[in-house]
Amino acid sequence: MTPLAQITLRCGPAVRTPRRSLALAGWLVCSLAVLGAPAAWAEGYPTRPISLVVPFAAGGPTDVVARTLSVPLAKALGQPVVVENKTGAGGTVAATIVSRAAPDGYTLLIHHNGMATAPALYRKLAYNPLTDFEYISQVVDVPMTLVARKDLPAKNLPELLVYLKAQGDKINLAHAGLGAVSHLCGMVFRQAVGVDLTTVPYQGTGPAMAALLGGQVDLLCDQTTQTVPQIKAGAVRFYGVTTAQRIKALPDAPTLAEQGLKGFEVMVWHGIYAPKGTPREATERFNAALRVALKDPTVMARMADLGAEIVPDAKLTPEGLRSWLKQETERWGPVIKSAGVYAD
Ligand code: ASP
Image 1 (cartoon, rainbow, N blue to C red):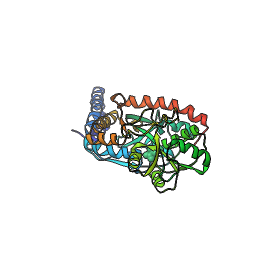
Image 2: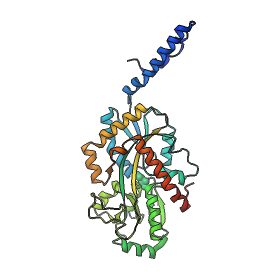
Image 3: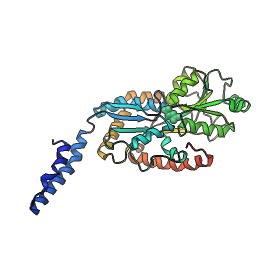
Image 4: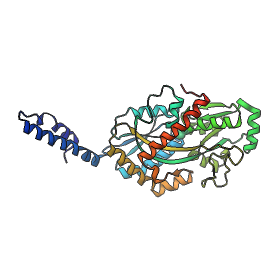
């Protein structure tokens, strides 16, 4: 098979002939050759390691999802899938980097609700989530949990609400930057309880959890993909899950809603994106590998243990991701704008 480079080179001087018929024939051959290129290109992709960019620090929930998938993805693709943590600004640094990366299928982004909230939070956002990317697929939906440092006096949610009213801004809440879901969950919680907690940003909820375990911060609203092991180990105070129904991973855990915090539902969805212009052959090839990886028994067991729900087939499509992203952007925009919260 002629490598792509030679095919495109053959479309250079070789077809410039003095006679019209030969030129036309040459052009036709060249066009067919170039048209044939995507097939050759697709059969080759990937021919080198793929970078899967995670917008938050290692050890956090997004990182856990990416690294859990990277092993079966590499097996399905025949090339390493290298997880790269590029942190900052609630995930917008990483999204900016990927939006500007070469559209060749070798730099991809895994991100969550932050793709939908950034346009409302960042007035000088360097990318448009709905036009500057190719869409590969949704991945998993992950509930959140409200946890505290183990020695916080409040043993349950009713006691916590009384304690927060008394302590006010002496109590701090950690998050992973404006636009991170831990920040959004914290914002919804603060509004629900009517207490203006002090917030402490980190480069991800991996470091935020470390600070909580070390007693440096009081509260954290984070995804079960990180908190389930800590809750099961009794290493943190646990007040409830942010879902409408209880979850299988923590069957005895109450929801915040059933304890009186009505309407407190936050679910973290995830998508995989490529820079605009990435050939369809690459995005489709990665999508197919992702579908295989999500059916890997090890992945399914780990996601179930961590409370992460693998999305149904209808969401495992580029259209399933883009339409959901559009819907979420339209949902969160007015909520954030009405709160008057801006990150820049
Ligand atoms: N998902 C982020 C992380 O993995 C945390 C967040 O968005 O709150 O650190």
